[in-house]
Length: 312
Image 1 (cartoon, rainbow, N blue to C red):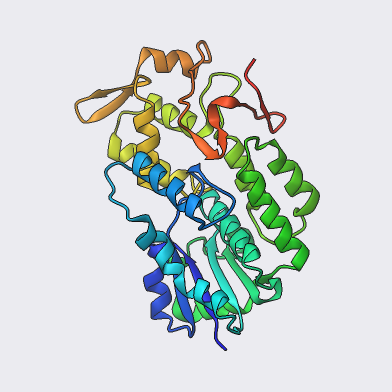
Image 2 (cartoon, one colour):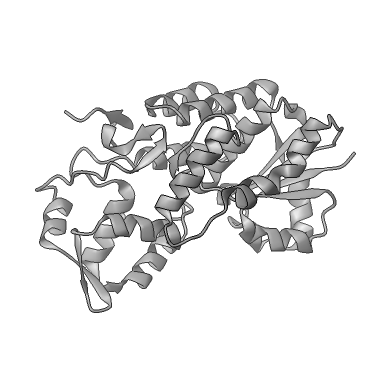
């Protein structure tokens, strides 16, 4: 018998290999927090849908979805197909929205593969536990120590996380917060509550139509003259609760054209952007933002009540 390790993204893979931790390592190269998803993770429909979305969201990035995302998980599918015995499947993730939505997808996949909860160890590093918040910052011996501190869910908790994933894949995300509070608030998986709140804040605000990411970008543009590159670097550095990289912020900025002006190498706020920032105008949100099966344009976010509302 041996261990299996699912690593969230390639950035951590090199550090993990240096640790010489025994077992089979697999990389989960996905961005589940953006775009449409099907609850049947890694199914044929799921793969077609994700491949089409990533091509649209990152048109400058050539992505072979099967070889990039599905093929690295092949040892996991072989484990199930061959009904082989194993010790533990370790899931290595960080404490932000990007990682938590990916983690939900992996937990749902393991549940759908009928793997036992007592053999699934979750390693989710968090500053809330006085830990480093980036897995790549750990030394090899520290990674082995993290394995000894991993979280094991009960069968009921694993099923509840699977249900939470199904709710994320639904047309209405209001149930996400209610279900988490009712069923998973006591699970020692730090930061998930904050990630759900951060996700809901990506829907257009009741007040001016900007979601929280767009609001932060436009506010930064209004305060100082930045180059596009410096603006994106600032967002990556300061908005760590989302865990987004430059590709995501570049895509968001591209959809905000009209709210800012490119002057030489710098961006400055437009008159339309100023009016929207002051809530004197409402920005009609781009309908192409989709999470799960829920369209951003179908709801408005009430931050005071942590609630999504249908536009009036």
